[in-house]
Image 1 (cartoon, helix red, strand yellow):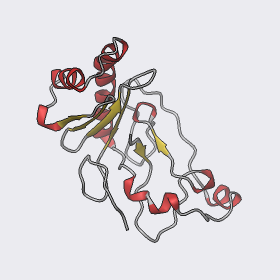
Image 2 (cartoon, rainbow, N blue to C red):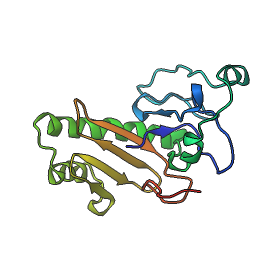
Image 3 (cartoon, rainbow, N blue to C red):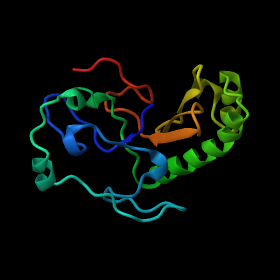
Image 4 (cartoon, helix red, strand yellow):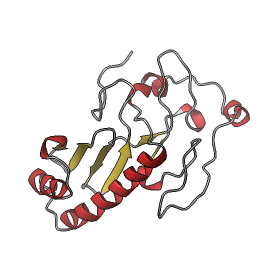
Length: 173
């Protein structure tokens, strides 16, 4: 599932998102205010995440693997300002609602959908797949996650640059 992305890139542009030229994505639950105008949200510790600089980008050498560049269209857009705080709060609420469902091994799509609709999300905006993966389009706030594994994961983001809303775009350049 998609995590919050730091950058969205266009075709033909080289971007180094992480050491080695790989795409770096930050889970919403651990995101920290770093963009101009963002501030720590309630319950969030104000720490700074190191950013790539010309000196450490050069130390890793030139990007020769264009996988990250060619798949940048799949990078979700980050949330900023109050919308970011709303996303972090939504992540917290969804985890709290779904973790008991996951712990009871009731990860069928109907059980997950019922829990998410019970939080106030419209049923037609909640998509749940077998295996416990879900996607919520909350109009300008996208929430995706999974109840598979050892813990429920949830991430908030602002959609995709390709204009596909909360749905991960298919294809590319």
